[in-house]
Image (cartoon, rainbow, N blue to C red; front, side):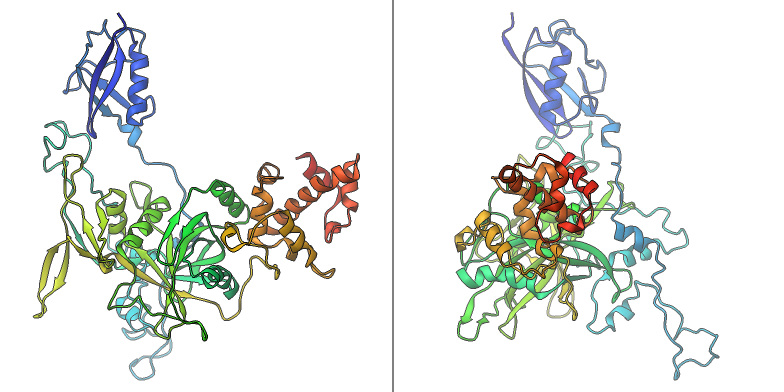
Length: 566
């Protein structure tokens, strides 16, 4: 009858057991297989035999009619269409830089050039953007060329890079190998991932991190100043051209969002954030995106003069192995779209900033990324932190569940010879790329409000986002304050859109605006409408135009009507 049967399904990734019945149709069984292996319905084929004969088609015949019985082994193969290159578009900054010439122009050298003003020689001919000698002689010297300069280097030969492909490293066994049993019973040179020798990456995806102004950073540091506990936040901003380095990219930070977290003096734990998707949408409406994350590692030295301890340096570590793994995780989540990669993505522009004590015992902001090799080790779960030594990581060893390729790094002995070490343990300095972090001479304000609406998730400080704090915030506005300035605060906009009492998410986010002014005006007008309509019992929509709210005269009657209808 319909007694339960177990069918084994072997795939290149491994074997899974599927519960079924004799009366179950092949179509229903294949749906179960798709769900178990995470394929869409046409992304794979299942066969009775390993040599791809006896395909099981999606039909209404029962398994017993197809002679499939309890304990049988079937063979699954992914279809090539399910592994096709995904559709994507590169970031605006990448599209812009790919069209720039990038050459470094030099003036005629009065001492070395022996030609007229129109001539060129080796001393004044334009240099390529990847010229290492030029980068080393900048002040300060630049150790890493920009990613676009690296692309020019790859594509600059006689073939113009016709055969260039930026391959993402994989530490996993290649799928589709049919000549042997799956790991741990079998492995061969075709499916075995190559050993990895860690090299210091010659390029970086982001060349500079710039906070628009000191207020953003100061407000973030306030949490540590008031509690002594460490704090973490996501950096929202945009990627722009960094003109100090040929074809360089800068991450500009316009705001810091602080997700729910538990912080102590020496630890941080992130908690699930129910507002994460809404914050992403709000940022996108304002033309911003998540460009990185920031965390504090601060220990007070002298509270009277406000100094902090200098703990992160060449004698200890710059980033701990745990922080490298977290940075690698975030970078994998925010992969960099790239036309030269068969996968459609390569590396990441997601940055890490640490607020920590500098050599002068003041708070310094240090920027980093981890290398693409580190991203691969983290993605494929091959890298572990060392509990007792934060400056060391540990390459996992192979087990029956997972094959891990050998990971090596090179060091020099006292005679200057290269020595190869197995990465157990591994100094994490081989995984880190440092990025200069700066503040502009002339501050910039995407969010221009000079008032301070409480920052989200700071209930531990007694700073709460509620309608009482909204009323307090609005009561500080002078009559001369412009309407845009009042509502131009990232934390206020998040509260208006996500609060539990009157969330405006549906009202605002269904409208498509990329302009902070329009977005802010619409958010507050809808809020005012929601609050005032029940009070004043308005029956006619255009009356909204006459509400005594600063700046409401900026809106036309037709716009108000369209907002309310929307």
